[in-house]
Length: 141
Image (tube, rainbow, N blue to C red; front, side, top):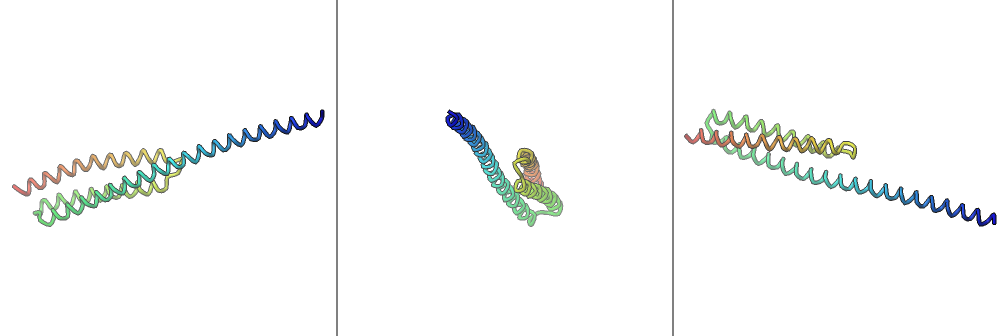
């Protein structure tokens, strides 16, 4: 009888331990899934930022080409636009650095900041594009 009681307690203990292990495994699996999601989001955001940086470089090159044919006034305008684009490029590089350094704890804040940065750059580009068109129109008159 004593043996049956001890075996029963032992079986109960093993069952309780296995439930605890299952919970721990489930929590570990969920943590790994969250980390994978964050890493995937970081990779996607890095790709978007690198594309944005390349686009800024293209725009700077376009302005350089236009500047060669421009008069003094238009050159000054183009140089101002180039400076704004270089500032945008610096912001993108900082965002890339932030994404690379982001941890699970900081990711949401970093993601929000980077999204705001890219939105601000896109808004500024609309303005720069309009300025370029105005400058070219003024130069062609």
